[in-house]
Amino acid sequence: GDKALLHHAIHERPAHRTRERRGRRKRRIQIRRDEHPTDTYKASNYWVDVVFTPSNSIWDNTAVPAVPSQPDSKASTAGVKFKAATAGAITGIRFYKGPQNTGTHTGSLWTSDGQLLASAPFTNETASGWQQVNFPTPVNIAANTTYIASYHTTSGYYSVTRPYFTTQ
Image (spheres, rainbow, N blue to C red):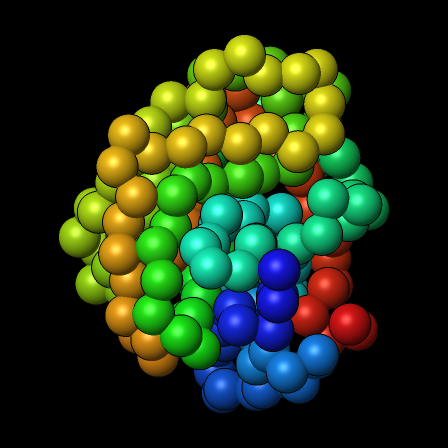
């Protein structure tokens, strides 16, 4: 698929900075300890992804984090804020799982102001690598509208690459 149809962005404090890469405008990834992530930390990539139709996803299946299991054992939610260049449907959420991230995981899709659009628990996970959950019903999204894809882990040990968006 044409991954250039998706681009992601996130609010960066205190100023906004945009970087261009393969036709996608992007900024930072965010993490918080609640269900709707809103903050960011040091241009980190927390390896959360969306499954988008008619394209594919933001991250290639061969993409891997610098730190597969961040040594933080607290339950947390990580996410990516994104916009699609075209209308389409989000059929699910993906995240990169390190070997220590052994808890229960839930993928969610949100509006930028925190309205939950879809959520589903991950099942049949492998010990590590990309994990995917499909929503029972695909969620139609509008072009040039901001959404947030997130996953919640009960065990912590999320994957991270820091800094990412300032160096990619």
